[in-house]
Image (cartoon, rainbow, N blue to C red):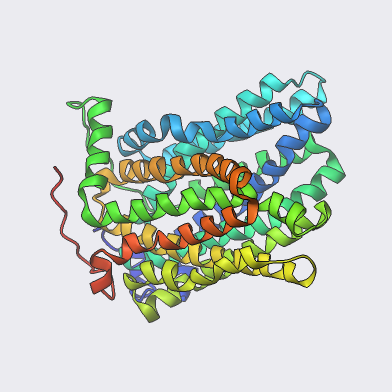
Length: 430
């Protein structure tokens, strides 16, 4: 367990929201990440629009561009965890954001000189994805060194709220910027957002303990050590199974979302974004209330309650019908986002509290490698089953499967615990 930083002791040791608002280092990290998340959400809209509008890309080329942005998670997540554990997480975050500033900023520069190509977009998507992998692993591993374990739930909740808010407001902001400055010009906003993030991280006063040198082990052995820790930990293993299965079925449902709205519910393409935004509202509420719910229900119990109880009504999406019945779709997705955000905040806080600091990066990388790896498979299964048995039955199956993943964490020690103990014995790994 990490020691409580002195600047947090000054404001009191109770894990309430007001103490985090007065935690200078966390507020710097949070504010910088908020700006960066909004910029990244703009790029999610602007990058494919650059390909379509400026370069007249085909549907297949746009699909390859989307794949290039996520390929890095499958390729380098595991070695990224080992490298993060062997270096300064704060320095890695700064370097990654400087590199993303240059990489993303190259697009509006190339467009201005008339030399932009699809090859450059592919390289930018892949290179920015690599930086994102390293930043995200370092980011999740750095937070426990910034504050005590009792404040992790509240801190992760605020960071989760930022992500959900970016998902809600980012596309609208991106559309407005594209209309005002063009698709390439809008990407300059994302590039500048990394400047704010870098300055915020530079302003953090607390320094993490330097990592112990590990010159006696190969990279492969260090990666294997992180995997063994996750697989050998009886509770973490259940958390990974729950998250991975839930992401598999979520990938199925989201792959069918647009088809369901347009072809089954007859929603106009112009309104589909508004309907999908309903889910982000649930995510914002989940991030804002995760800490309070954990205190009321229990920081351990909330992990399975969030999925099996809060998430159960999400199946109403599959019962939506044209007309006013369309409202069941954003309602169900908002419930799913709410339950998912509360679960993610709780399980991430647990993972951070039970992992030794020297394994933090590899643990986060190993978990992310597994649970993100199931999402593309879910998309393929969704398209296949949607063709074979129909969109609505497949969507119902996906929603039920996502909810049923919660039984993995129910049949674990969490079922007999109310709160996560402050000191958790380190499990033996095989």
